[in-house]
Image (cartoon, rainbow, N blue to C red; front, top):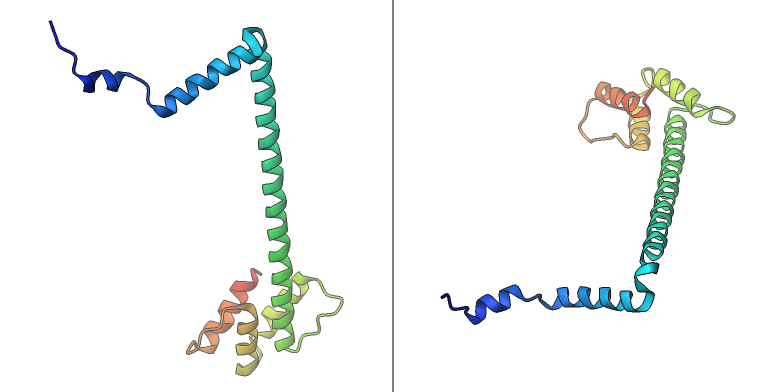
Length: 142
């Protein structure tokens, strides 16, 4: 015959968190009865689905706003680079400005190339002018 130690007995009994779950299940059974449980579960499932859909919609809206901010930021940088290269910006699309910048950057002076590189965000001190020109064109995604 084996003797059960007190440590073995407590290892088999549920702990504090398990008791809370058991008590919640008993309370739900007493309050709603077994006939109402499937209906309650369906309602809970619908509520969770609606919550997930709302969460996805909010995430999509945030993503759209971030993309819109990125587009505005890129347009601003392109306009600054065009201004540094003395390219008129009024009435021109972003793509037209990018193409004009790519054409003008090869003929521009060193000061203009540096200003355009700073506007686009690719300037690094000590870089040669040809490298800066290449980085400007690469940053414009032309």
